[in-house]
Image 1 (tube, rainbow, N blue to C red):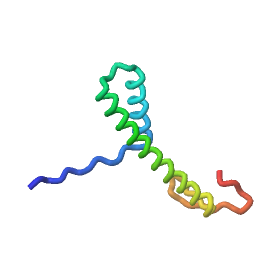
Image 2 (cartoon, helix red, strand yellow):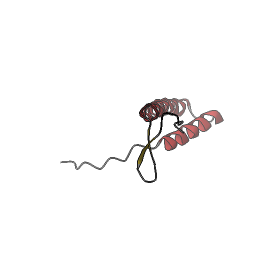
Image 3 (cartoon, rainbow, N blue to C red):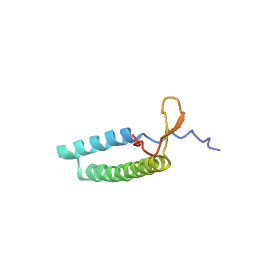
Length: 89
């Protein structure tokens, strides 16, 4: 029976963007084989989709925060409500 290994956490948005930049750089050099270029392209497309999903969720989160008029202090986790005349930033 095979023991399940703990899954690594999903990479951060920044980590995915860095990897995408690396792939683009390698492909732009032009020294990859056709097969390696295709693999890099496939990985890049996957990363673009994942980054787009992360950005979409971030946008939804920001919309919920600004619509509710409640912000959370990232350092303390404390919530504070803003008045109707206050800007959300």
